[in-house]
Image (cartoon, rainbow, N blue to C red; front, side, top):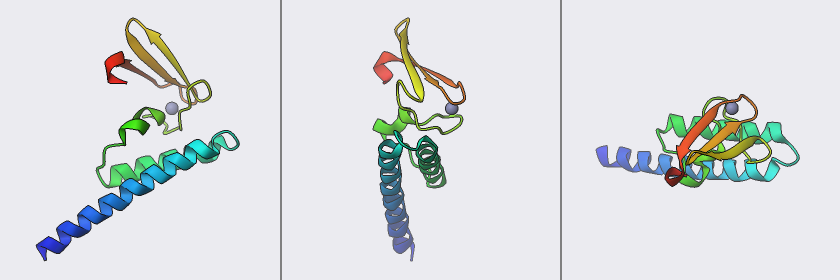
Amino acid sequence: MHMRRTVNRYKTRRIARERIEILLTKAQEVFPRDRAKAHRYAELAKKIARRHALRFPRRWKRRVCKKCYAFLVPGASSRVRIYKGRVIITCLRCGYVVRLPISNV
Ligand SMILES: [Zn+2]
């Protein structure tokens, strides 16, 4: 039975990863006409990742606010600046700020 459980866990996580990808792609799509919906998709993706202890896909990692789970679109729902060799990402919904070394973005 152990084998089966391992396979199921693997499969469950793979499906979770797919759902996260779909949700964030939809968030991107719907954002221009329905920001609230985009934020809901982003939050849901975050919840799925947490439930399955999955890392967020690299390309989406900076696109969801760590504090309020808003879907971040630079110039629309987030502000991106470079300051002293760091990238400063500010969530325009809650004001949360992330500072990253440029090499880390
Ligand atoms: Zn936020």
